[in-house]
Amino acid sequence: MDRTNGFMLVGISVRTTNQDNKSVKDLGDLWGRFYSEQIINKIPNRVTDDLISAYTDYKSDYTDEYTTILGVQVSSLENIPQGLIGRQFSADTFEKVTVKGEMPEAVIDAWKDIWLRNNELNRKYSYDFEVYGAGSQNGIDSEMEIYISVRMPE
Image (cartoon, rainbow, N blue to C red; front, side, top):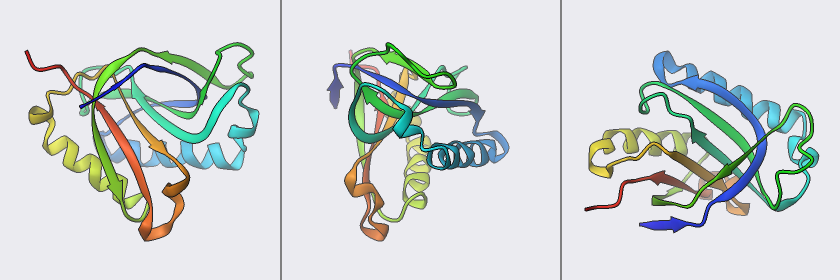
């Protein structure tokens, strides 16, 4: 298990659900907007250019509504441009899943596997996140990480 110290994120968001494949369209639209509007260039105080897709505000679990924030890690939540959202994520414990292969298919398959392992993982549903670094845009050789919030064993 990995422990993160938390981070601040600025980007754009959407409220969605995995029911009826709604998230496939909503998240596709969110990524499309992020690139077409060059959102990354509007974000002040960037710490890195790695993209982070955070899943938070779960209504219950992965079968219900949640919020996705797509953005980058920042050093401050001051001066957030209009139309963007900022969020502080606290320290937590995560199960790290390394995903390799063509995006977005590889990450979609990884989430399907995570959902199948839901009980085994003892998910916390505080927030989960994906990190897309320099190696995430290499076709079939792409690699990225998913961090799933988990409860610590007693």
